[in-house]
Length: 389
Image (cartoon, rainbow, N blue to C red):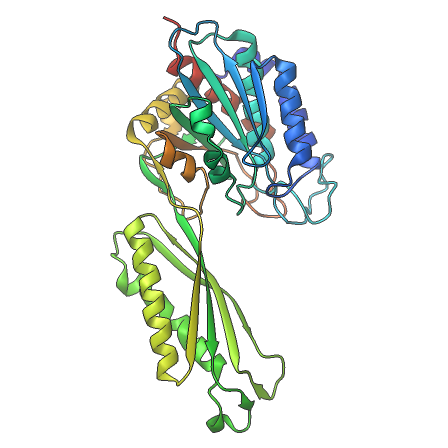
């Protein structure tokens, strides 16, 4: 089962859809043009149902197979939103919106799922329903959770759900996956150190919040180095430090902001507990006070074993077993497809994007040559999971 001939035959059309989406990037839930574009294509393909407004601006298309005895339904998900990044490459289809671009390939993900929809609506060589999920707000907005909370799984009778992401510099025509955690949970923290301001020439009369903050930054590095089991994966990063505005004033307050990542829930909890203990202890040692706030983000993306093996087998049928890595190392990036996997069994797979700039880079671009692989994977998954008896 190589790339499907019919999909290869309209690959230029898939590329044209992607270029249109790339030129008109939209952020988080404000994907009204993108959602309208997707819904219009699904209706033109002859989908049996097209439902908009799920998870605020999500779109779901349903295609019923030529047999419908099983009444089963499989969900396939693509994300639609872009990023607040200024594109720097002078592409013919470059972003027309200053400060916004598709720097993560969601334009490609959407176009590939549309390509699979076009093929499946033409052939309908399966028994049951293909549920095509086009999700807003993956980039920090939790659109996956919003669609789940709107009852998507129950309304469309989804029994299993699958997602895909391109990976730059992974060769074209390859896939990679693992059972269990494949992407990390993500949480944000804000640490406010309250000291006592004063003249820089009279430090003995002040409690220097900057000095306390510096010790906090160093001490936080002990969490991964000394508190987390070396066989577990974790990240604690302080990414912003804000304090003072003058060269001769010791500021009363310093604010630290950062992120923590983990693959296991118990490690996630451990890191939060250690942050509280360390920050309050260090601040107290200098006579300062600390306020600690966490903003919980996405849970870890954890693949289910049976579904992982199933989609890996489908991928191997398209590109060959040697081109499918079944034990890829997890990434410490995060993905809100995790919310869907908490509701239904399923799996999330990586697909090679070939040589390119990294994700979230202003020079990144999705590779059009990758699209037939992704569209074929989705189509074959449906035909294999829902065979006509």
